[in-house]
Amino acid sequence: MPPGDERHRPHGADAWCAAGAALYARALRERRVPARDAERAPCLVDFGLLHPDLDDMAWLLPSAPSRALLRLLRGIEEDVAHERRREAELTAAFEPLLALARRAAERTAAPAPPDRGAPPRSSAITLLRGVPRITDAVCRAADTCADEVLTVQPGGFHRVWDLGSAPPREQPLLSRGCRLRTLYQHTARHAFPVLARFEELAGDVEVRTLSEVTAQLVVFDRAVAFVPADRDRALALEIRVPALARYLAALFDRLWRLATPLFPHPAPQPARDGVTARQRAIAELLTEGLTDAGIAERLGMNVRTVRVHISKLAEVLGSTGRTQLGYRIGQSGLLGPTDPGGPRGSHGPGRSR
Image 1 (cartoon, rainbow, N blue to C red):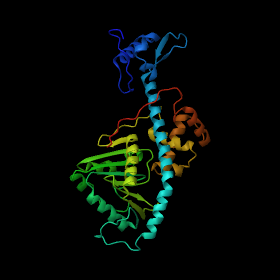
Image 2: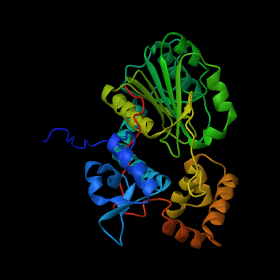
Image 3: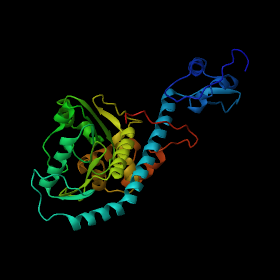
Image 4: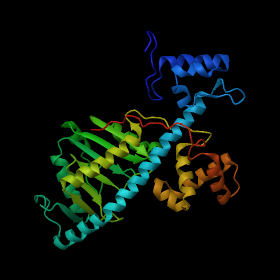
């Protein structure tokens, strides 16, 4: 390699190289640059910041930074959608195992709840019947927790381990050095009591949100997990199978990396083309054919709020009916890249162990 000839090193869109930054600034000033000048900064073409001049292929024209950013963000949204599909596939694959465990636990479960002071069951997976028994088991696990608590709270703003009606024990955990991470749905971003409650806590607390999350989940020290066993939360499974508890914690980690920070440092959810992040989530479910009630259940909203957002979507896209709205959503590029060859983004680093 000749002296002074520095080859371009691949990098992400969030870390500009000096050659690329200088060439793009020049392209904005001069309206175009020779294509040969981009050989030392191919990242500008890869990220969609420069594109060929169709009238003269020897030149490259600059794209608006906002347009290039939207294309990269669409790539991230595709990755999120892919992970949601994988989540559904993994859940479906484990459903027969969970059903088998429930049937086995039902055959061995005691007919009456144990005394509050009774030691934990030795069963690897235990079916807990009734709120008092669920509360007792969750509180025992919290009392012995030494490292971290991971929780998923869909469709509501429960306390971190509210599988039944466990009393609040977040602060004692935090005071002895445990870490607390909680996933809510995006609707929690607009609920003042959520932030107010976490602001009262002192310790290592983080909260993030997603449009959709799994069923309720609580994991202590990646060793003990609790999941609901019915829709009314009158039944729950206490899981002390190390491999299964670690699997559930790994699933949480994957969702955590895709989620948007809410506390202690909230990240904004900017609108794009007049459509907010919540409205894009609703638009995606509309194209799947869900009813207003179905969308409300999936996203943790009430039906009235869903209908307000659908009306705003229709107004932005110029639609006069629900069928036409679905067509307009598909044609707008709102849910995916309009350029199949466009660059893909990468996930943010996220904090995980």
